[in-house]
Length: 256
Image 1 (tube, rainbow, N blue to C red):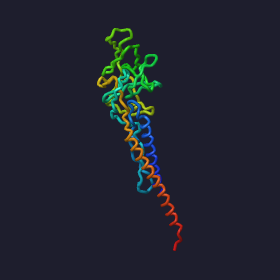
Image 2 (spheres, rainbow, N blue to C red):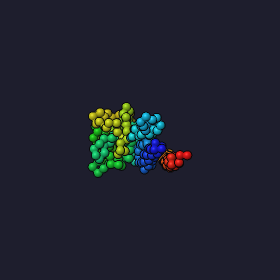
Image 3 (tube, rainbow, N blue to C red):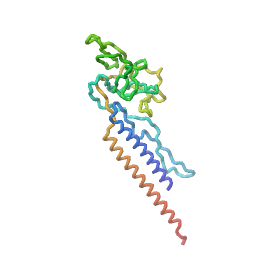
Image 4 (cartoon, rainbow, N blue to C red):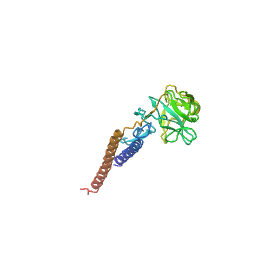
C-alpha cells in the first residue's frame, strides 16, 4: 500500500512543479520577447526498487530543466525608434548586471544616462566585439535589418547618417540552448566569449516589439488540468488509507 501512496505523492510533486512553471509563464505574459518555459520540462521514469519483487511502480523524474518554447511571439508595431524585434530565429547578445553574457529576445531598448544601450530589465546590449553599445547624442536613430546602428547627430546636417556600431546577434543554430534561472538563455555549459561569432542572418525590425510567446488561454487551461491531477492523487492517497485500514481489520479477525 505504501507504494501506491509514494507513487501518488510523486505525482503530486510533479503537478506542483508544473503549476509553478505555468505560474511563471503567466507572470511574464506581458514581458517583451519572453520565451515561455515548457510545462514541467521533460520527465524520465525511475522504478521504485524492491528486493526480490517485481518493479510494479514507476516514478516520474524531471530530467531536463531549462527547456523553453522557441515559438515566435506576436510582432507589435510601436513606432518607437529604440524598439527592435527579431524576425525569425535569433537572439540579442546581452550582459547582465553581474557581468554574465547571455542571449535574449527582449528588444525594448532604451539609452541610459551614460549613453549605454540597455533593455528595460537593465541588461546591457553588446556590439559585435562583445563590448557595451554606446550611442552618442542624436536627433534620430536608425537600426538596419543587419543590426547596424546609424544616427543623425545633434547639430548635423538633415538627412546625413553616421554609422555608430552594430548590435551583436546570434541565430543560436548548433547550440543546445537552455533558459537559466535568471530567465536568460545560454548555451549548455555556459557562454564562451571567445567562441562567439556575429550572425549576419539574424533580421531586425525597428519600431516593432515581439510580445511574449506565452498563451494566457493555454496556461489557464493547463492550470485547470494540473489542479485536477493533484486532486485525483489526493483521492488515491485517501483510497490507499482505506484499503490499508480494511486489510488491518481482516488481520484482526479471529481464526475460526
